[in-house]
Amino acid sequence: MKKLFTTIALSLALCSIAGAQTKVTYRTNALIPGDERTLTKFEYTDNSQSGPAQIWDFSKAETSENMVINQGVNTGVQVGNLNLGSSNNLLECNEGGDKNTYFEISKNQKMYWGLKGKGGAFIQFNEPIVDLPFPFAYGDIVSGPMDGSYTDNDGKVYSIEGQYFTTADAWGTLILPDGNKYENVLRVKVEKFYKQPLGSLNFDIHTIRYQYFAPGVRYPVMIALVDDTKSDCNCACGQSHSEYAYYQTEGSVYALRSTDEVSNEDAEDASFELSAYPNPFKSVLVASYTSSKAGEVTLDILDANGKLIKGFGKFNVEEGTNTVTLETSDLGLGHYVLRATYNGGTYAQNVVKK
Image (cartoon, rainbow, N blue to C red; front, side, top):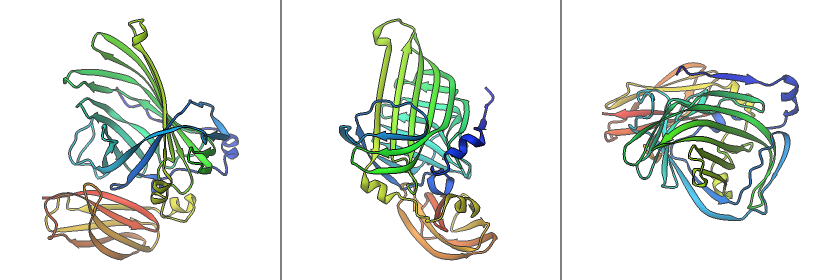
């Protein structure tokens, strides 16, 4: 099925209402290898009301267990039509030890390719779900098909066919169970409608994931999930509904705050692109970066888990294309991440030494 991809901006009058709310950008909100997030689960009842100037108050919600998300590099797991040789950043995120989720990050969008459960069950999409476009502000919408397959623990494969909608549907004030209060929070809603056979039954599945982005914090400070499943068996056991949510602990939010202190508008103006060659490489790696402004860049090598392996120091950046030759003979064979830190933003490129 040919990918349908549309971006719709609501009227200028609607957008002008949200002049104070935040905007997500590649520079300030892209996933980065090596980041670790601690989320706390809490009692949640869906508040699906959208629009400007909302107040989301969860200060009295009961909390339960924690979940840790570790972001590593996808070192070879094929998901859907994902091109493992792509120059984009490919991530495998371990979510609480129960599943791994697979993402592709480009300057334009965060793309979700699928997941693998602890028992071996696997969901993959023919084309990725655009989980977060860059930049993205209140009133923006992206939609497309979510066709793919589900492989159960026994290796049997079932088709998935449906549609997704990613919408920046609300903004307002968010109060978390730990009492932390965030103003000008942008809510991004990812809604999926799809059909999936399983055994002799057919299921209609409707899921919603809300991501709450606060200014100056790289990742959502809160994530809420709502799932509805109905089968054609016309029985009580063929229907289910669940609602639950997680929020970032105070320490996690502090550690993951965006490093740049400039506005989103300034960040968009200061464009920066990173690449590396040859890739795979042997003893020498050339870092190539193109910038719209002069400045200074710091280059590092991380392992596939995001651990700093080698720092190359700081280099001058001239407007246009720059190259730096990096000596890597002391590195072992394997998958690495070349990381560039420029003007408060962090950029990454997967590289392989053979």
